[in-house]
Image 1: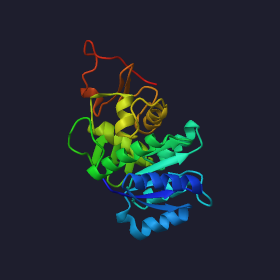
Image 2: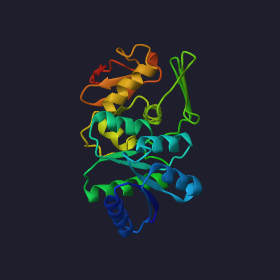
Image 3: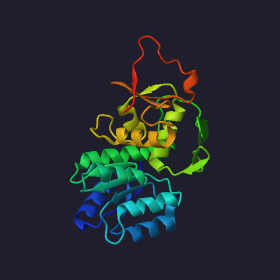
Length: 254
């Protein structure tokens, strides 16, 4: 599939290398070297850009800020973030501001091309594939939580709560797949759009943060359960849940 890809990279040799290889795959590529130029290009011709390959460390404006501004403006085009920074908090912050995938430098060219292909397929399909094809949920209530996924408005006990785009996407996936045991590998694939076998603590970190926002007692969750050695299970109405079924995995908090 031919796509228009925006590459934002201030290391000229690397930017030109990425551009050359993406063009060799049949894509149209625009290359800029700083964040403000990228934002101007997207603002001028947003509908023609299918994907952004975004370096994190840019002069004047970081990739974090670029991605954050894109999402704040309602731009949903996929973003593949590149960075030489390898700390878990850097990766987590990238997801927090709305990056779809995050790759560490140096990287293998084949992996970059594979991730680009994956993001384009998901984007052009209109939505991430789901493990179960249920009805898309735009609004939900459970416990004291009210979430409108369309407007990104969240209230708990009647008070507004701020959630990052990734936290909302994770919660939406759980809400659309209630009662089902969901593995970390599935969450990595469907929510983070990363290989399911990737070794990362991102899922666990986000689960902990999500519990702090939606659970009455985060240390004793009733909605978002951990099933030891299996994954997670989301329960909208705990009082109606069939807990204690013989042979069912044991729930535990983290």
